[in-house]
Amino acid sequence: MGRIDDIANRYVADWAALSPIGATYVGISGYDHQLDDLSPEGYAAQIELTRRTLADVDATEPETEAERTAREAMQERLGLDLARYEAGETTSEVSVITSGLHHTRMVFDLMPTEGEQAQANIAARLNLFAGAMEGYKTTLREAAAAGRVSSRTQLLEVAKQCDAWVDPDGDNMFHGLVERLGADGALGAELRRGAAAATAATAEFGEFLRSELAPRGRDKQAAGRDRYELASQYFLGARIDLDETYAWGFAELARLEADMRTVSAEIVGPGATVDEAVAALDTDPARTIRGKEAFRDWMQTLADQAISDLNGTHFDIPEQVRRVECMIAPTSDGSIYYTGPSEDFARPGRMWWAVPQGVTEFSTWREVTTVYHEGVPGHHLQVGQTVVRAELLNRWQRLLCWVSGHGEGWALYAERLMDELGYLADPGDKLGMLDAQAFRAARVIVDIGMHLELKIPKDNPFDFHPGERWTPELGWEFMRAHCRVPDEMLRFELNRYLGWPGQAPSYKVGERIWLQARDDAKARKGADFDLREFHRQALDLGSLGLDPLRRALARL
Image (cartoon, rainbow, N blue to C red):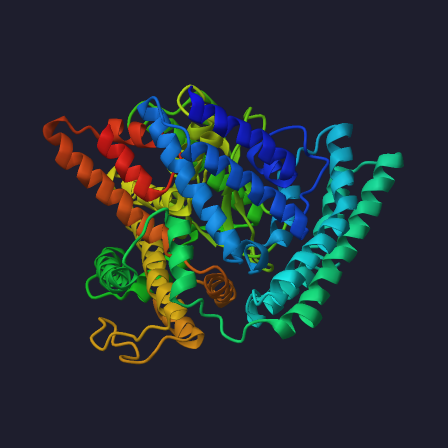
């Protein structure tokens, strides 16, 4: 380890003290009883650390190839963190999937719960929740006064989420957490007091969004080209031609839907439509699981089998990474996500399913590819292996660096790879993968189209409103026509795209760049190319922007 690594490791220690929530997310111990300062001063302290660290990195020449890669990764990530803060994005962003509120709420999902000290930490955080939200309100007020505020629609949707999270007949998440802990005595009383305070603070925050901030919110949800270019670069770690990518999205979706029709004929018979194949699969008792706990157990079995099969054959999976936990999330937002292991792996990597209220039956054909995406060889392998590689990567690379295009692109690449390796030979499972891929391709079109308010090509392959300009209403119509997702979940997805510009395309565009990187490696190495070695070398670089990834791979 060299000087760049010393700077990086020092940054992690200083950052953890400023972001106790972040420390819990990445598994750094010692901060579980604190919450972040979400006031303007708290955000300013974090960005000052970023600015100071970036200056130190810029002034330090790397001594090794590993240091060069680490330096380029830090320059790219910290530079964009600084750019987003200076553009007002960091302190104003409120959407249905990300905000200071969401980060603070979700941290309770990851906290240890066993033992008196762990439960005392939860009690402390619950009792700090209201203060954190008051600081966050001040930040959002100041940002709005400076002309930086999220759209009215997003603010009102998050207010609805607040209502749902504290609904006594719904999620009721804080009281539900305390009930699951089962503590009694003085600690139990403190937990209940904290749950009541956090519940009240969440309800009050929802009312703040609804009555104070929403009236000041933007009428239009479209980000515009300047904001979108910064967001796209942030989520990809690469600069792309947005107009070319938009056109590619149409071609890619058309290709995938053609493949879906071919597989549908295998399922039902010649001439069958995709909808007919889906109906056949959804009514197949062998592909239906009843009860969310049984569904969780099915996911766990499939994830464990993938680890067993792939280790030593197509990947060398470190021992610590050969365990992943499938979890039912405490909320019902309908989302699926992965959380990484703690630094010491005492908390394993986990894939979470926030099951929508009322959903009791699950079709496995849709979710085989999801397990590979969230587990192995997807997120769990990628993130877990990075945490393990202390001999190759500094602490910032192992714990803090996350680039959506790199991570989500890899996970989508992993789905396709499992098909290449023969794990989706069953036509139903193959259709599930293609359907998921088509869903991500449709997002490329809709996300770029809506936020840049582009015209729909007159010669688009779907004859969809040719020549008209994208609106959220057309985005909804297009997604419903091309995605087999329940309306409730699809509405959340569309709200997510509108509130988080540039993130949704990072999956498919990230996969595209990963595939290009693999093709480049094949061209460079010719007959010496080895897929298992390519995967090892690429994952050993840790998470980094996709432009730095391509440069690093070219130097290997």
